[in-house]
Length: 98
Image 1 (tube, rainbow, N blue to C red):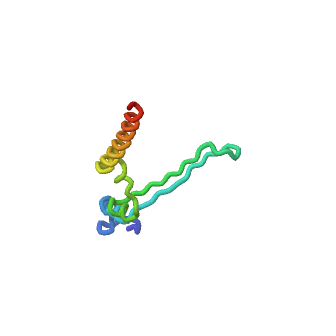
Image 2: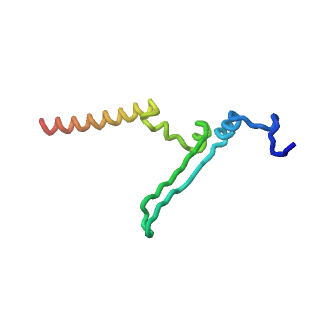
Image 3: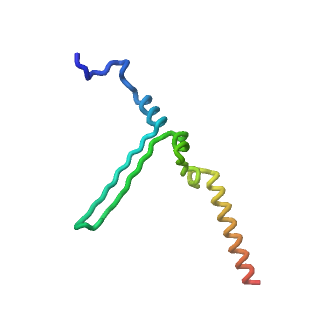
């Protein structure tokens, strides 16, 4: 019997792996650079973080809370700011007309 055969008690299913990755978090980073005669033609930096929401917030990552497409709170804040700016512009125009 071969040593590299997995026994049922040693196998890890996909759910266990996913739970571990989300609990600990994983970072994948890479850079792609294309040069021709010492001239950069293309420079791409790739950063991928896979983690649970709790782990991401623990790491200080919470960009989805400020994205108006993903957060109703952010959308409301964005709309309030836009309304305030429009009111100021309207008041300035009215002052010029009067």
